[in-house]
Structures are given as C-alpha cells and as structure tokens.
Image (tube, rainbow, N blue to C red; front, side, top):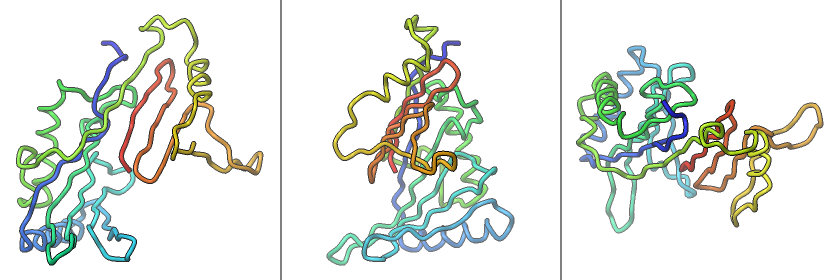
Length: 214
C-alpha cells in the first residue's frame, strides 16, 4: 500500500438539541465519568467570561479520537443555541498507526466505531448520520521515495522551513534547556495563529502535512 495519500485529519460534526436534552446530556456525561469513564470535563468561556460550551475529552492514554462539546450558547436577542459537536480524529478512532491516514475507504468503519463509543455515554448522542458536517481538516502524506523526489526527507523539511511564513502566522517554538532559549524543532514545522495550525512533520521518509482548526 502506498504511503503517499490524502485523507482526513479531523472531522467536526454537529447536532442541534433542545434545552432539556442538553441538560440531560450533561447529566449522562457526569454519570459516565462517575462510573469509571476516562473523560475529563472543562468549561470553555468566551472573552466575557461566559461559558459557551462544556468540553468532554478522554484522558491521556485513553484517547478514543473523539472530543465532545456540549453547547448552551447565547447568540443575542434572547436566543440560545443548544447542541453537541463531536470532533473526530479518524486515525485515532480506528487505531491506525502514526504514518497512515484515514480516507474514504475508512468512513463506514469510522461510523461504526463512533456509534459504539456514543452508545457507551448517552442515547442523546445518537449515531453519526444524525449529525451535520461542520468542517473537515485534511492531511496528506508525501513519501519521497515513492514519488521519486531526488532529495532526502531531511533536505525537503529544511526547504519547507525556508519558505515564507504567511501573514498572521508564527512558527511554534519550545524552550531548550540546552541553549536556554526558544527554538524550533528540525523535524517539524508548525505555523500557528488563534484559529488554525499548519503542520509539517518528518516521520522516517514521509512528510506529513495537515491544516487543523484550533
């Protein structure tokens, strides 16, 4: 199987709820956590300090590839939006290895895995087909050997890092205890702003590229 392939990095799907179902869904998540579900809860607030949704995410080492966001949001003029958004990383949900990506051939298996996980938590979450698509973030793998590109993956990453950085983006850095300053990673190229992350990663002979929402 070729490693040079385009697929889905993240899918976001949304379902409207009534006020009563939104309350019940939060209760079901709380019951799931009390009964041993490996999930944490966090209130996400806007700049005014108002809670706009509750995010339920799986704990480290128990990641199923889904984050749940339960909305109870004031949109002005006396109106509120109630609903649930599921942010899915198909590769993680399907237990694919780090190199592979999820594509159209994985959609049916992804739906089954999603439905199985939703049933563990609450019937209100429904099944995959009861949601509408909110956004999809794509990714692509380039295997330089397969594509007969006459340079090493390290050289290609160096070339990518020499490119111009778009307006409103900045390259991500991390503190180095050796140099005592912020540095970039030679094997990755992260461009970030408040809403989008552009990622290039070097994995063996494969360059992995994706654009993700924050």
